[in-house]
Image 1: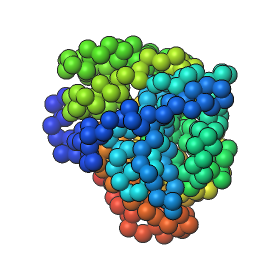
Image 2 (image 1 turned 45 degrees about the vertical axis):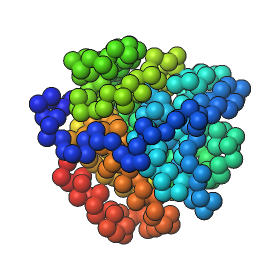
Image 3 (image 1 turned 60 degrees about the vertical axis):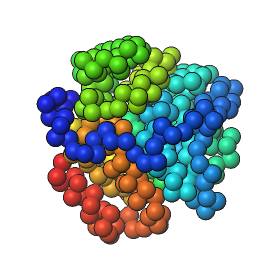
Length: 330
């Protein structure tokens, strides 16, 4: 359920707080690039020089999203010495639609092909919602490509069950399409009374979000791939293959996620061998937007870990303990 408006003031100082270095100090046009992938243009931001001994981080947005969904995360991650790539998936933002029918498998291939095109080598994948679904699929299809994975409210568990429940699926589809249509108007972000009905399906307290940030993420809405990507999410089940992911995986979830159940975080943790979860209290579906400072700290700490650390949670030391504490308090 979305957060009640009168509860927004109690969400904590980090809710909606801007991060440092601040994204507003950058002329992002200077970092925008476009390259052909399967004969279609893919749009992305390429930020940070990157240290040769640190693998790049590739950020993958969710359904209806765009690279701007990561504005509060790109610079803080790059400040650790990483090159950061934030892409518009084919058919979203300013990337052209894929040549074939949209599928999660196809998106996994597109991410890998973009990494090849940019000669990135091994990378860290960080995906939100459908982007998390895509990150897992990429890691399964191309295990040599991926060093670590971060999942933020990832799709791919109960979404395939929803496909078997037409009534529930119809309600969620209608809500998503309503959000998409409303978000096409730039006036929405300037009129606070409209924010809640438009953004509350994926942001718990829209009134706590900066107006200019909402404006940026709104620009990526209303793209042609929306319906096809939604069908791809609902119609694809990869749960039996998740155990093939052998790299460390950090799972970040909001306790108040209104789109993907919190129980999905536990299922990802159960089936992926080297994974652990952190559940953030009073947070919705978009933790990296809602609590960017906290999420950035979790990601940066995860990136610093030794990649061949023990896979069992009880052997992972203080970082795992903090994750368990956060989940228990949620």
